[in-house]
Length: 407
Image (tube, rainbow, N blue to C red):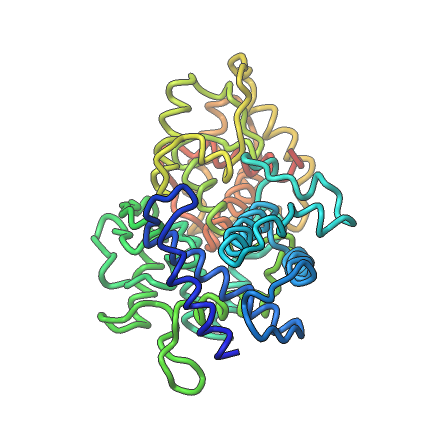
């Protein structure tokens, strides 16, 4: 395997610096294709293939990779990207026409499942898929305190897996915002602390690493320095240990980033389509502006990108009915499980009365105990039992109502 790795590095060194159009490739592109190809050959070795040289790669190997990726719950988009990297590699070794599209290697999978969709059609968040995020974080803590901290950062700040691993908690803390700078594409971004819970998370993460340390695992089991490839592989192994794979739970680690995007939209009083929101909830200019703001929090500059996380709004839509919130709350009340309707603790009473008053202003009249159930569900999206209230909480309450009503 060491010889194969050396040979692969030589091929990358000779070819990865130039794009197919002849232009110079960025460091990000070279790194991405290198990481992907090394991971593919490691996977082939784990699958029992004993390749002596990288250019011995054949159709059966690509087929085995596709089947393994699909079995592990990789998305259609991820499989498409990984095949594109293999296609580039095969051009380098004189096998330019060998790599086909995913349906060629996965004929037993419905083509619709392999079609790449730009916009999310359902929520990819852990909470919307029935995952108790707080419980998973506790399981992660029990396995590895750094892993638990990684999940907390992903929930609170919507970081990508590599951004989590390479994060220097003490450096990114700019008091009022999280100054992400080790990011995809090297584009820094400020993620403002909109909730007290984000401050709690950041302080917790800082408490478990030295001021000069990143959050990723610094060493391997044998005490040698851990590479980013090692960290990424361990991240996925840890997720699998707590039951987070597409095959087991219908979610991936990236689902926490989608959950953050939905949460950020709700803070901006936008109910995402993935949580039952419609285009008619506010004027188009306001909706577009809020979506751009959420997109920028995720490190993107285009509004359209956010649709991959929160879904796409209809092209043409009339303003929603003034009674939309009332209808949503009434539909949910009859469907909230009985065990969710509890007496209100004294320390929550003021919040529950305030939330119930907000609903009354929208002509939705409900017992405060039901309001408590709605807010508890919303709070679970932030990995906390009771989230501090915002200035306007109607969007969050309505999204929670949509959850119970199955919208």
